[in-house]
Length: 162
Length: 67
Image 1 (cartoon, rainbow over the protein chains, first blue to last red):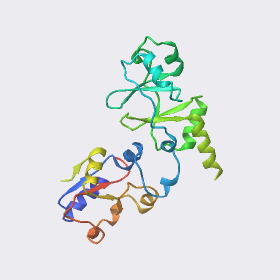
Image 2 (tube, chains in turn blue, brown):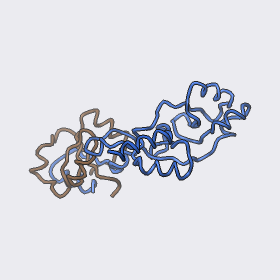
Image 3 (cartoon, rainbow over the protein chains, first blue to last red):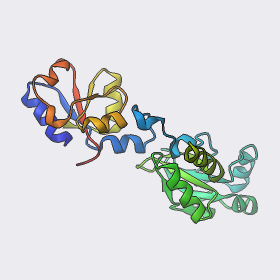
């Protein structure tokens, strides 16, 4: 549809026309702000903590453990230099395997979610799968942050009560 | 010929003053749209509705996804 619109604009005499083919879905999936009535409804992006501790593949778990001491998050995303999520370190693994590297100890290819997912949907998923958090990324796999199951549930309950 | 751009380029162009047009139905625009976009549904795209656009600046169209 955006292609036809772009061509139509050219036919109307516009000399410099572009089309953002990935569209609105791509934009909201990246957690970027939107305007409109839906913008007021909290979603997964609203409850996502963005200041989480991360590590690289080559980091030793003893070093990761030291960095995690001041962070309440129970898991540590493993990312590359571009911020792309490569894996996830569970807290019990971090505590017990100090000599290993993140690459050796991580869960590769963890399940991820986009920030535009509804709170109801993510609350149900985390409950059904007994997960403590949701890992939130853009559609390109870039880490946005983590959303704790307790916070998701609390905000969903607030929303449902309105 | 219109040029296809990605999200990164879109953000750059918006910062530089490009005009953004959502071509979905008005109801969908009212619900959620990219900040700064104006609504001109595809079926209403004509000389009259586009007169609000500045021909000297780039215009970017978008809809929901790759449809």
